[in-house]
Length: 52
Image 1 (cartoon, rainbow, N blue to C red):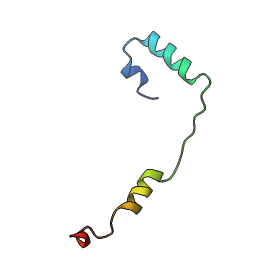
Image 2 (cartoon, rainbow, N blue to C red):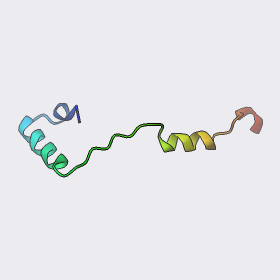
Image 3 (cartoon, one colour):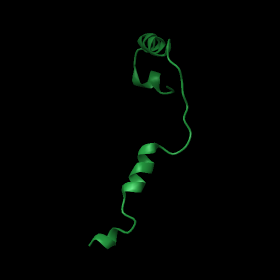
Image 4 (tube, rainbow, N blue to C red):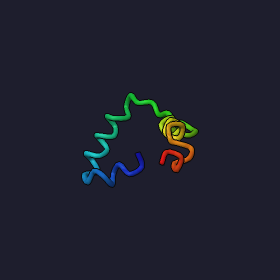
């Protein structure tokens, strides 16, 4: 959460809130194309002019 302190004006409150949110959290970084984008691409017609 790199912009956390920019969003919360009070640094003490921001630190306390962030500490409580991430205390028991696990960070998972995913790679690859989102599944929604893949599904949207499959659902989109190949030739948009073919339907007219």
